[in-house]
Image 1 (cartoon, helix red, strand yellow):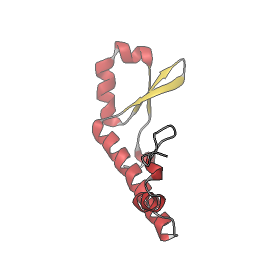
Image 2 (cartoon, rainbow, N blue to C red):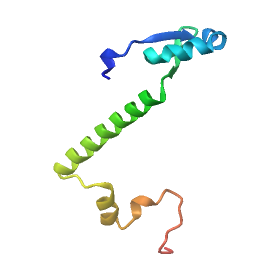
Image 3 (tube, rainbow, N blue to C red):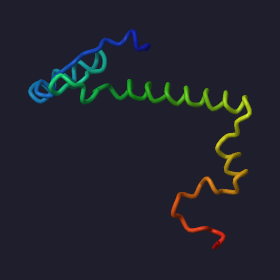
Amino acid sequence: MSPAMIRKQDCSSTDLQNHFGQVMEQLREGPVTVTRHNLAMAVLMLPEAFDALVAAADAGLAARAMLAESEGFVGVEAGRALLGGMSARKPGDADPAGA
């Protein structure tokens, strides 16, 4: 489902508290933005919609990674191999070589 096809619905936090069941039914029509003092605070959506959103984001990141590799950038594993595992260490970690 493209973002243009998603019907945007708003609901105040008070309405969410007072009409939780109705708001849950509204999720069948699309995500519901929960507002507090007219500011968006959260977005509620069905698990299937969330899974689709995550899958689309993952696919986009994978495509960008493949494009970067095709342009000569190395992947994570190749980068770690080139750096001898240094990229896996965090600042403050003990040096595995004992230096």
